[in-house]
Length: 108
Image 1 (cartoon, rainbow, N blue to C red):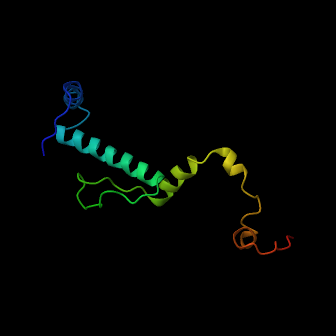
Image 2 (cartoon, rainbow, N blue to C red; image 1 turned 90 degrees about the vertical axis):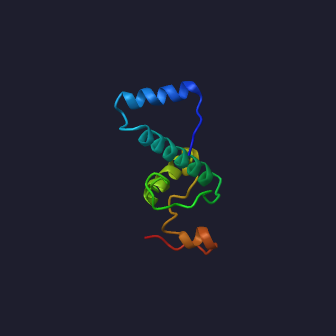
Image 3 (spheres, helix red, strand yellow; image 1 turned 30 degrees about the vertical axis):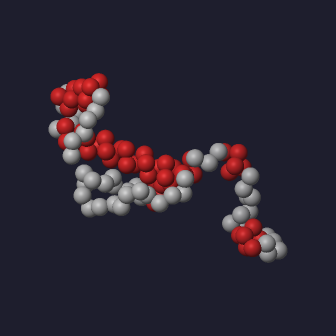
C-alpha cells in the first residue's frame, strides 16, 4: 500500500521515527491507522451505526476492541450531569414501576 501524505506531515512522522519514539515507519503508521479506526468506531457508536469494518486477527490491520466496561464508562461520561440528576433515586427498587408502569411496591 502506498500512502501519499502532505510533505509537512510526512516530515513530522519521519522526525518522530528518527527521534526514537517508534522503531520504524511501519510501526508509526500502524499506530496512526489504529487511532483512526478507533476514532471512526467512536463516531459510529455515537450514531448507533454498526462499524464499517470487520475486525480481523491481524494486529496491524485492526484496533484492539476496548472492553465493554471501558466503552460503557465512555458512554456514561458523554451524558451531561443534569440528565443523570433527572433519574429517580429509587430506580433499582421500583424497576417494574418505571419500566412497566406497575404500582410502586411499599418500601421498608
